[in-house]
Image 1 (cartoon, rainbow, N blue to C red):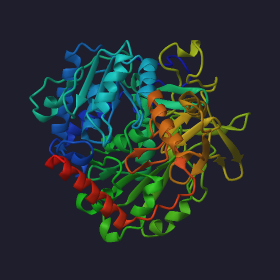
Image 2: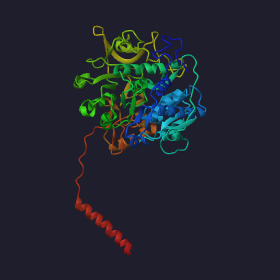
Image 3: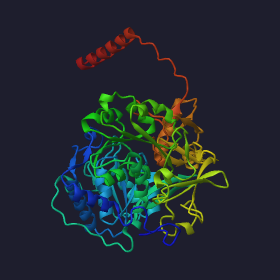
Image 4: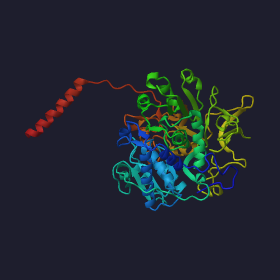
Amino acid sequence: MILGRGKKGSSSGVAGRVSLDGLLRRAAEIRPDARALADAPNRPHLIGGDPRQLSWAELDGLVDALAGRLRDMGLPTDAVVATQFALSSDAIIALLALSRAGLIAAPVPLGWGRRETTAHLQRTGARAILTAGRIGPMDCADMMRFAAAETFSVRFVLSLGGPPLDGVIPLDDVLTLPVAADRIEIARPDNPADHIAVVTTDAVAEGHIAVARSHNELIAGGLAAFMAGVPDEHSVFAATLAPDCFAGIALQIIPWLMAGGTLVAHPPLALRIVIDRLAPDGTTHAVLPAAAAAAVVNARLAQRPALRHLALFSRRPVESQAFAEAIAEGLAVDIFLGIGETAVARALKGQPGALMLGPDSHTSGGGQSPILVESRVGPEGHLSLRGAMVPRAAFPPGAENGQPPFWSVDADGFRDTGLPAAADKARKSVAIGSREPGVVSIGGRRFAESALRAAYVEAGGEIAPVIRPDPLLGDRVSGVVGDGRAIAGLASRLLETGVTPLAIPGGTRQAVQMPFEDTRPREPEPLLDPLGDAHSALAQLLSVARAAAGY
């Protein structure tokens, strides 16, 4: 499926006719026995299953086997398959297998509940779901089968890992007991790289929208990170970003495929494991959320002897001076700002939150290659972007003829991001704001503020949510209550509406899910009376003894 045919832009793209599958095939042919993909050692605790160590030839064979199984199920070319995985070998094999089978991956963000997932499935017209059995405490396959029951288009729910469930087809045998599979070849009309590869989801003030990207647009985003880190076939990537957004694919998976090196997949929630594995794995390139970068930068040189490039991802302006000492020691640090699902743009050094005004010459090579991203300030004072990585058409086809919200660009191909921006022509930079009006970003997940508040109203409305900035989460939802019982009641009703505790953080405290942060002063704990407790226990024992004796 090709979107935006005939619109402004080069049909050849940055990679010509090369698709994600083409990058994999090339690496497997050139370096079949070299180590390609490895799981972090904490995989069994967070996902289940033993950590994998795969060569390029083994990875290519597993991708063929899974792609063949998907085709045998009768899924037609360009069918949308929703996925939900933490970063792992399973996630990468699934993404590449969908590409090889001629299908379109539609990642569901981690932390989404049934309400958001069902809407995403219906929005994209998903024909199947391919998910992990579990991710930490979350039973993904269990949640997905109920979401599928509410979506008419879904025919299959498939899982990798996890216990057997009614209505879920396990595919573990494809990866655990691989057999020689026939080479999958899918004929593509026109340019294969112009067909849709991935559909991610973004939030605007009116709600969530589907964002479709071709192989060329994905590779364009990865090329920006590739040119910053300059990896080669001996590079080892420590990848930590979830593969459910454009940045998670562009900043780590695409550069690894282009270089033909090794990728170590780290599931989330274990920064200590990332640091401990830098030296044993020989990590040369690390991709991290900016909020977690300090731990790596402050690590001793003996803990990161081979690390030479750090790619940091943030959705908020980040002060690069915090990494000045590490840069002086020879560690290259690049900060990539995620502008929703529109683009990942390299922040200018020394100017927190600023992008290059006009074409980014760092990635375009002064006009020697296609422009990956170009910025300007629109007439309404908002940041607008266009370029080889920016999608130019709505999804599904024809969505632009219906009711908004949907993806749209102007006649020049610029996408209005909604972020407030100010141009400095003398310095050739654009300073951007930290928040798009009407959109809340919590832990890297974006939500429409109106939908967030509506969930509280639907749940009862005893507490009005207050959205506050948070240095780690981005935003957090807080509230002040007078009766502690209201917290538990609201939490249960929020779960019933489908809004998950991860979407409305306040943390998980003592295994109790909280919908927001309780800011009341803590009441002093009552004093213990050991003597009184002993008397009470003795009285209970005496009563039991009398009853047994027949008194």
